[in-house]
Length: 303
Ligand SMILES: NC(=O)CC(=O)C(=O)O
Image (tube, rainbow, N blue to C red; front, side, top):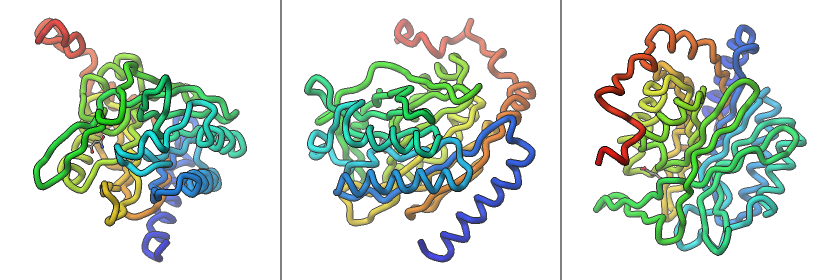
C-alpha cells in the first residue's frame, strides 16, 4: 500500500469512528474489500480471508467482497474455476472467516457449478459461519460496444431466477450482482419487500465504469431511499477485462459516503439507518406512487 492510500484508508476509518459514537444503535460499520484478483484461486481466497480479518480489526460488522473475487472475470475460465455451493474450498474459507471473525460476509461472487450449469453466484455468511443467502446473477452481462467492451456471459453462464435478501439484525438487505444494478425494477421489488440496503458485488469496466457506475449506484439509492454498496476488484491494466474499481457506498440521499480509487484498497464506513428513516419521512415517494397510471412491477402485461 502506498503512503497516500494508507492515509486515505486511515482517514476514512477515523471519520467512521467519530460518527460511530453517535450512531452505533441505528447502524453498523461495513467494509468494502477492493482486492486484486489474480489467476491463482488459492491466493485470491487467502487474500480475501486476510482482508476480512483486517475489516474485523477495524470494527466492521459486515465485509463485502467483489464480483468474481476468486477467479479471473473471463467466460473461458468460469467453468474451470467453478465450485459447488456450499462445500467448495472457497465456501469453506468464507464460512471459517465469518465464524472466526464473528462477522457477516457478503462473499462477492464466484463461479458456481450445479447440475453441469455454471452460475455467477454470491454467498452470504453469518457470524456463526452459516450460509444465510445465495444470489445467482439474474441479468447476464451480454453487451457489445465497438471499440469499448464486448462481453457475453451467456456463452458460459446460466442466469439465476430468484431475488434474494438476508437479515442483518433488524436490517433487511437485497442482493444483486453487477449488471443486475442496471435493472431498476429489481431494486424496486427489493424496496417493496422492505429492504434497507442493496448490495451489488460488481466489476464494471473502463468503458462503462466512468459513464454509469456512480450514476447507477446513486440512482438505485435515491429511487429506493436505501443505502447501496458496490464492491469492485482493483484494476489490473494488463488483464483481459479491466475492472473500473471505485467501490463505493451511497446513502439514501444519493450522497457518496465513501469511494475507492482504482487501486487495491479497503474502505470502512458507518451506516446510520436513522438518516434513511428521516429521508423516507421527508420525501415520502413510496406512498405517492401513481400505480393507477403505471405499474413498475407487473411489466409482463404491459409489453
Ligand atoms: N460486468 C457487469 O456485469 C456489468 C457491467 O460491467 C456494466 O453493466 O457495464
